[in-house]
Length: 139
Image (cartoon, rainbow, N blue to C red):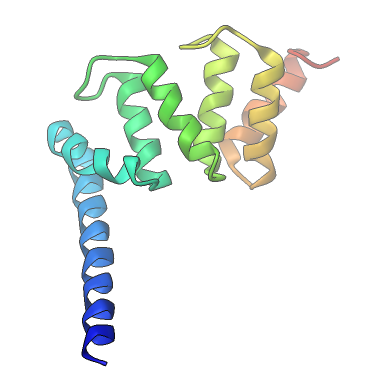
């Protein structure tokens, strides 16, 4: 019984600690303390936290606190998008649409915009509508 109680307390501590690390990193990002954000969010992203992956991707794609690296940004967006993160799916669509870090591919842009739009992501819906309006990749 003591071992079970200890295990439950320890798992709660680990979960709370991980959440605190993400929150610390997210607050640091919002405060433009990119060094601290990178320090706190990197381990979270590597452990599969989709929100941390998206923020890390944003940092790399736009050069916030790190050297701008579209390929690294794309990698982290892919990790988050694979978990269904609509923001990351939209960003992958944008990168394909504009050829940032990947060759320009309007068909891929449409695929990613559609995935995010289907989840109700407003920016993806706008981006998808714009492609239809301009006839990009669609009749």
